[in-house]
Image (cartoon, rainbow, N blue to C red; front, side, top):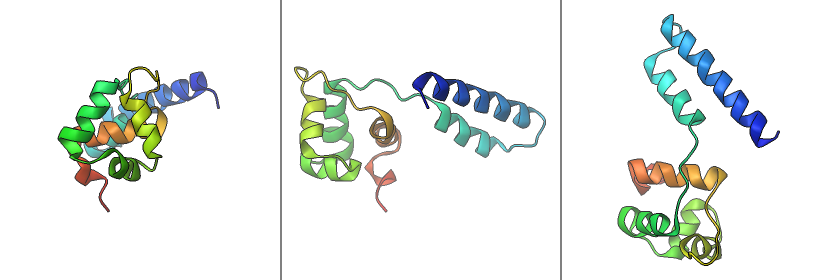
Length: 108
């Protein structure tokens, strides 16, 4: 599925959820979860990734990489302005979750 199709499906899913909520078929809690799933994570700059890791998670790059299920070199690239690499997909969603709820949200 292409990114364009994914965006369209997410928009339609959110529209349907809003209609169901309007008619009291979908709870406010479920609507909130669907909104969170359909939202696009922000673009994470190298500075923002480093700030989340050091201030929110208070972890080394290696430990932080383990929580995100990526290689330490990936975190290093995200934090390096010269690399031009940014978190995307699941990693960006996990960073968004850590930023909002703290690293405890990922601790199982």
